[in-house]
Amino acid sequence: MSTSTSIDLDLQSTERTAEKAHSFTEGNCETALVSPDIEARKGHFVKDTPGGLTKRQIIMANKQKQRYRRPSDDGTKKRFQSVSDESKKSGSTSAEKEIIQSTDEKRECNGSSPEIRRSFLEDTNRTEQAQKQLDKYGFIVNMDSNGRVYEDQTEEDIPTFAQMKRVERRELKWNDMMESWEITTRRRRKQLLKRVRKGIPDTLREKAWVLLANVAVLKKKSNITYDAFVRKNLESAVECEKEKDDMLMRSEALVNPHSFLATQETIERDIHRTYPRHDLFHQDIFSDVESPHGGDVGSMLAQLDCPSESNEDSYKNYEDAKGGQAALRRVLRAYSVNDLDVGYCQGMNFIAGMFLTITSEEEAFWLLVSIMKDSPCRMRGLFGEGMKETHQVLFIAEKLTFQFLPKLAKHMERQSIHITMYATQWLLTVYTSSFKFDLVTRVWDCFLAEGWKIVYRVMLALLQNSQSTLLVLGFEDILAHFRDLPKSTDGNAIIEIALRIPLRRRHLAKYGKEYARQAN
Image 1 (cartoon, helix red, strand yellow):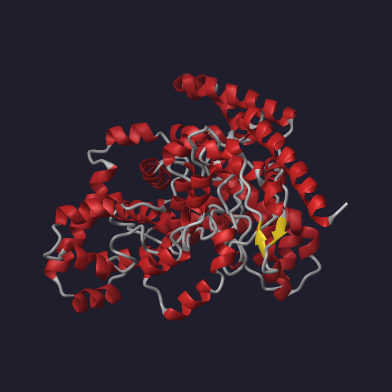
Image 2: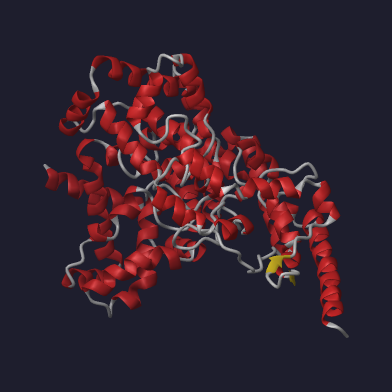
């Protein structure tokens, strides 16, 4: 048998395999994936194609075909481009074009330095060919340390029939609870907490979080809508520009960290550090195309005061800007207007960004308002002036470590490892800044329902799970272990350990009172 005949037979066999996979994912796996309707409504990383398939399903169906390459006439190897007729009808080609944007277009919109542009253009061909592969939370799994997407042939796990049925049963239970939410919260509170600790189904997490945070009540109580807060922020920018020149504004920012300009510039710096590996924000990393004013506050003010463009047009451009960074910018700036005493503090960007990956932009804003001001979360004191409650949270965390893990706590003390060296970021952002979302979403399911107890429990679980390793390490190696810990953590396993730790509210109350006595 000749080589060409062998290749043709292999390709035919692969096409049949891909068609079977395509048929299976379309018919049987749909319930196990994130709901296309919900994601399309939010404008996130999964969108419907005309045929009803998601991008993820299209990529899975054609994965086998993409592995085969055929020699070209000139001796170089080109990727064998074959797309099934069904995928063509369903619009897979347009979906792939949406996933892989032209690098040259990004460079033109960005106006970045020539060095960055040349570096990026070196990998243009590879970047255009590679398709982003997302986990169920929207993070890009085939991205290297330089932020480049590479071709990955790793098989994606397909849920078993038993797993899909289990998810379906849990979704039915949660739908039943949410349809009669008032009765659930008043009469079935224990059952609600039990199901929350098992984890809210991914397809229903948005709706459940909005209900747990009482977003509807917050909207009714507020005299100002989210859109009004966004507009108010821009009106404040115009006023600042008219009253003071740029140099005077910057001088005030150095003296008063809560000034308008200082707050806006701090937000802008942190936006570009927020979840660069998430598909919602990855599109904006090398480009400010989603914002008509770019990343500089001065540019935004100049645009607003530009005689060739009315303020009304500037408002519209700013409010309608697309992309994850544009949405995060609006949410954080709107909150800084909503709560002038707090304004903005580093760490809030991860919480707001995490909300945006789950909910709509407006819901993300009201969730942020809720967890900052209302029970059971009440995080406002952690980000206020002096960050007074941050010291209290760390004091309680240290006391709990000595109570539940005394041997480890004493070892850390001998090695001069203070809790502020590893747990500040965990607790201040409630694990959103560094840990994978299999842990983050489970923590926040419980945090929205029952408050701070789960935060301390997870901290103790992380330490307990690493205790045998940490006890034989010295100062430098302990810090290195904590730096690498988020990457290797199994979120579901940590939650199981955390829920078995016999931490009670009376423990938190006891150490809270002790801190208050020492502070006074």
